[in-house]
Image (cartoon, rainbow, N blue to C red):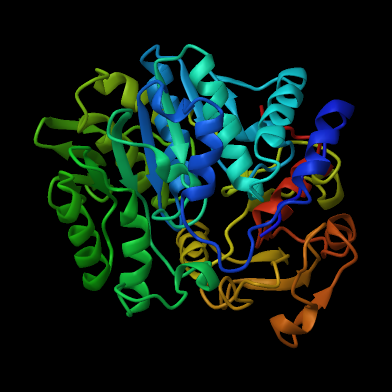
Length: 433
């Protein structure tokens, strides 16, 4: 899988051009390459500030954003690495609260790319090696690390019990089937059990593994088996911790209970993600955190591209002050989350990568879509308009799609890909910071 990155900083772009030539060789899975690369760099992953490690099909990025906000509300300095980036590659490496600056990024990528030139590493392996190298050099109180794909063979899974404070698994669903459901001996055959098995591969001996719950029975069984295999203490939503949004809204576990505030991120699913972040923090013992900091983090979390209301800008000006919501969701679970978070009907502008299910969003949103326009995702192979049915209409880009929407009172949803979300933010002059 090849990623897409551009920079207006010449030295950074030189290194991004080198990154763009990298891809995962067919058939190679495992941690050998990232392990060798990190060894050459002095094994920075063993010298990190305490780490929170988060996997999941949906919600892991939001959970990481909640973790960061909660920890910072307590006064901690936090390193973060998440993927993909939306507008700038710098978003992948946040140092003690600030995105890595361009000159340092250029030098860092050059160093790591040179060190691994003969290893045929992937884009993501280079990125994680760069992030861990800089995290080990820059003082902070904690790190938040998002799994890229799966868990068991993800480059981030070099992290060991010596640096991990807690691992978390967010919502599960079917995605990245080519990689996560590839035939292999000795692994679960049932798809959701296999997905859970891969995510559960981040479990480590003695490190709390906190899971969001709501999983099918076969998925939960696979996670329990992975935790048992390495003697990881398992804390399950609905058994060891609870988020109740129906009766006043509260979080509770064995340590106590507190009321949930008005969330900064829209959607009922974000209460579950915030609860997972809170549970991860409350089931580790090394970094004390107060209920006030947990609540404050829930109120202040910023995570663009997740039912994100666009600010005033060039794109919003094209639809006569109607709200434009932006979401990077691209699988059925994401479609169900969007459907449960929006009321009424809306105009949909949709762009999806060619390796995604074109019905993943349309089926959960059935009966809610007034008009459907299909755009390509810049820099990526995308589904053509006919993949979305006879009611879909092709549009030559986001701006043309917005101009074609009828002058009515219905809101607009742009969805289908985080890469598309990044392009929308760029066009609307909204740079994640």
